[in-house]
Image (cartoon, rainbow, N blue to C red; front, side, top):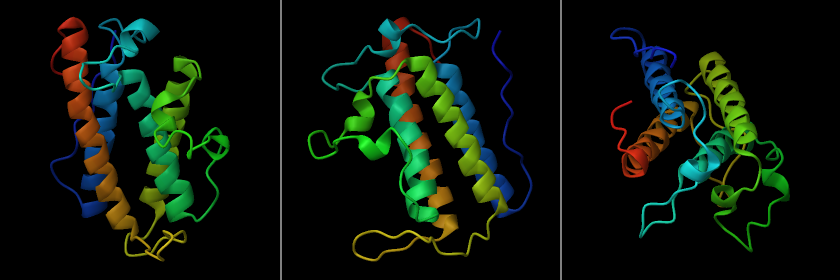
Length: 174
């Protein structure tokens, strides 16, 4: 059986509300990659694309894991990306995160671990603080900007996941 969704709070400060919405979108995505009994969908199902796009739910799992790791480790903390991202040949495949070859259950576990690490960092941080890491042009980001960007990133891909899952087996809603 699926775990019940924890709706975001209707009240609270900015940080509580933003992190609540981010967490809610993440919960819905995790439910999208599981069946009605709470079991992870098969690799065959998770690897099905909706032409003309080549986007798949499995690719999205890995991409969202990369997004969490990138914004937390490289941008906010100014640290090197963890594996497997650090050793990927991004020049040969700029979308290498979407084409990861690791077993799906491992990707889901790593995604969830990364989501929790990002949530803990954002919860404990001053959102006016600027990132330690920066882009090649010197751009730095506030923790607030990154938190809001993650809401946008997850929301966009949650819409993609809705369309993919409906195309795969007719499942709609969360």
